[in-house]
Length: 147
Image (tube, rainbow, N blue to C red):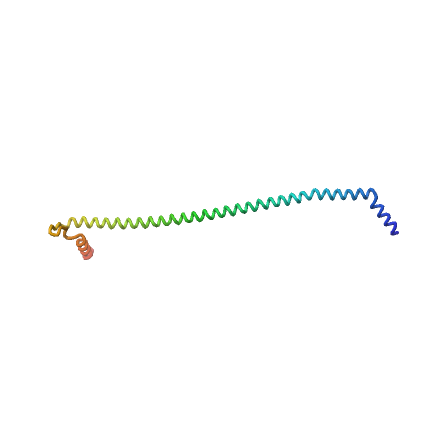
C-alpha cells in the first residue's frame, strides 16, 4: 500500500497539471516579488529623500534661529545705547539748566552791584567789591525776618 501511495504521489507531482500548477505558483511568486520589490525600494528612496529634506529644513530653522538671536542681541544693544544716550542727555540738560541758573544769578548780582557801587580812583576798582557785596547781601537776606 505504501508503494501505491508513493506511486500515486509521484504521478500526481509529475503530472502535467501539477507541473502547470507549480509553474503558475512560481510565476505568481516572481511577479509578486517583482511588483513589491520596487515599491519597497521606492519607499526607501522616498524615505531617504524625505529624511534629507527634513534635515535640510531643520538646518535652515537652526540657521534662522541663530540669525534671530544675533538680531535680538543687536537690538538689545541698540536699546541699551539709546537709553544711555537719553540718560546722558537728561544729565546734560540738568547740568546746562544748573549752569544757566548760576549764570543768571551771577548776572543779577553784577547788575545789583553796578547799581550799588561806585568807582574808587585811589585803588582803581569798584567799592564794595562784587564778593563783598554778595556776602553782605546774603547776610542781610538771612537776617531778615519773614512776614
